[in-house]
Figure 1 (cartoon, rainbow, N blue to C red):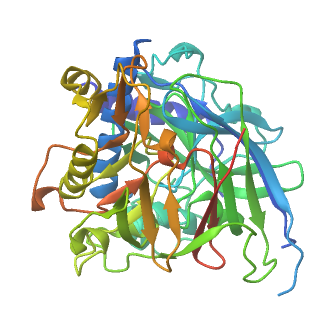
Figure 2: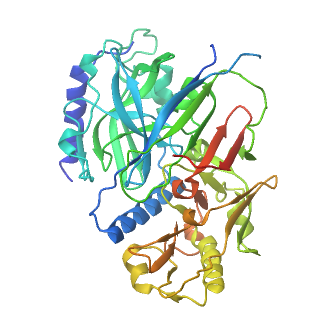
Length: 468
């Protein structure tokens, strides 16, 4: 651990010597999403336990993030979205001149997009299934004629480091207009993982359009991050903000904790477009920004107002302070594609799980599986020819209701004898855990839904679909 700062500095010295110093018609982009492999053994209990641990760690990060460094016709940019046993979904993006294609994990809970960069990229704890850490695809800056390091006085440097970043430009005189000092290196944490590197501006290339001077991270050193991140959060450096997206949408194919070649489409819509017209068949609830957040990073999250949680016909009594952010900005619900399982603060999880236990009291608890997998409650359903599971529903502001399909909140674990609730929490009880969003709607609960983030009209839309 003591050698890390040296490696970190050396990496930036190496990259600095390989890069050059810094100096709307509507469209829709279509991308493909794919699930990403998880670093674990092939044993299903271990895979689940790793996904539970990752989801809880991700929740802790989102709840307590470190300060960061008219009438036009709309058209679509498209890409394929692939699921992986890692718990995330990836898209392929092209950067540079000529373009280099790399996979990126699609993440609505963070904003900076970055790729593994240079042949010296180092990733610790990246022995993922189907991933050789020595062969992780990396971006080669020296092969691109359009890459530029971001200068310390470039306004885009302040997107990550704030308006006072100029005070850190020690080699720049206040009156100098030609400062060549680069923007400081970044270090970003993602729950169990992290990445560090330097900021570039580079061409982001789609078949229909090239976006020049796109801010992207060139990461040299990562932990548990064998692929880059495509940041779809709400900050200025996010992909939607830089591309000026009116909306983006995706449909997550069902995952079975393994890797598959089945993909679905992700659509990115640019331009002003069709006013406030709603997509037919979708239910909507408004987004809101957490303006009174105790941590400014909460402002990049997609908050929605959850009014009720229903288990069967029973409205579970969730404390109001967890459903709606208080004067300190803590509480509320966010939508996060980077979390695998939905997370609930312990007081919320307790009332939900206890209601499932009450309504499924005729089934025996599978305590051993709970201890191994990290999931709870789990029920032994062997010997039953007919099994009754209560419905789980979320009711949002405006009355829109998301009644989850059974496979989105219960799953067989190991074999067909045990079924577990696929929602997680931590072991912290009381106000100590009540910081940041109280409920994080993860990707497992979003599978086989058409999901729409309509930024132009500040609303979240969904409809149950067969995504494959």
